[in-house]
Length: 137
Image (cartoon, rainbow, N blue to C red; front, top):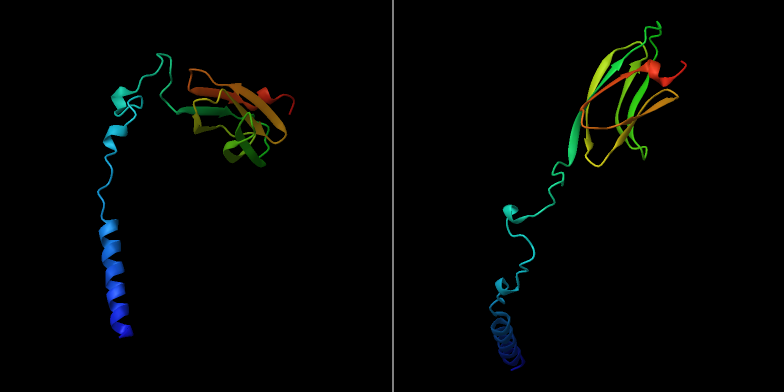
């Protein structure tokens, strides 16, 4: 008898839960915020807005023929000391490197050993640099 009551009670609870859980989802289409652009072409921006998030630069380094072949780290950093690129070079080497930086970055710091030089970025994507600019070596 206890088994039959348990089976009937279980069946009734299962049927009730099945019937209650089968509801239609609410219509969310009527709650769309019309101020949010729905397509890319709907986006409006000021005429001076820069859509690019990064810029490419080429840095040309002119070495100084001092005869020293000792290599040290050449760093390209942001003003907040974040390293963008690094490579080991000797002061006598000529070399070039391509870098990609965020558009909002306005200055870069080029450093080798204990010497640093701040470079202001502009429209020109080529930066020419020589170690003689670092001061007295």
